Length: 87
Image 1 (tube, rainbow, N blue to C red):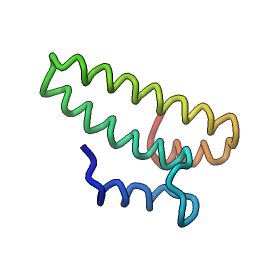
Image 2: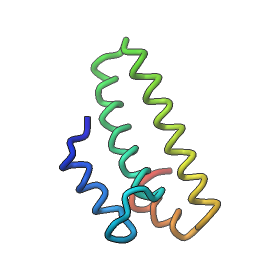
Image 3: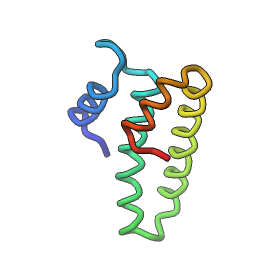
């Protein structure tokens, strides 16, 4: 679970302008942190299949956002991939 303070820090690091809270970059950054936390949880709780399903949905959602950004703005996509370390 991401705390409100931590989420605000993630948004500040990846936002495009001062009031940006919903751009693909911000959404991918938040999803990446949530995916990392859930993956760590699943390493400890192997039989938690409901959380595993949620993890797969988040990964698919992040992939959708990345595909959208790649289609709309290749330079923004490239910087996001470098910044987050994906691929």
